[in-house]
Image 1: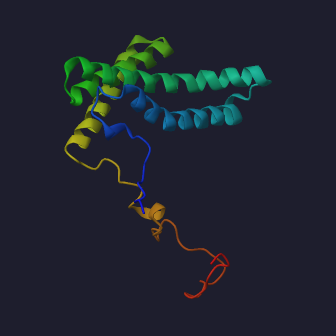
Image 2 (image 1 turned 135 degrees about the vertical axis):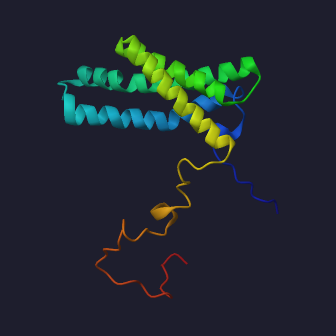
Image 3 (image 1 turned 90 degrees about the horizontal axis):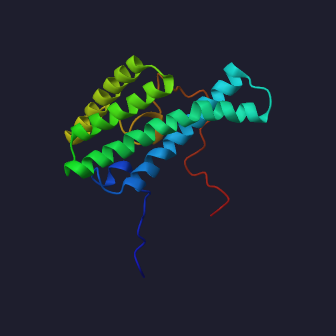
Length: 175
């Protein structure tokens, strides 16, 4: 009998920077696409209200593509700099964040916004990389904290059910 091997999807930090750029880009695009779709849908439904299919698609593109573009710029620049320098450190992330911020300034057509966003995203990316290297916790692991682990945090999520707890020996019909 062979042992069952668990496989998990590729994550961004599975390999050092400068390696597996396309896998890293795909791993970053999954949540980015969801965020871009959510922000664009919110804009279309609550703010802009375009009339017709083409204006709606144009609005989705206007909102979603810059988000995807900034993420792509960050991932590609970070990995290109890491590949050229042959080092996996925070400077690569600063350059990637700065390039992503500059793209944001280019999209808004304001150089000052681009420089300021570049510095902001560069410093934020450097802090993120530093926290990963030194194992500082910037955000908790969602699988071990709060209601996502199956243990509700009482003050935030009190039990408001209207039915009683099932007895401990209760079984389902699928046995």
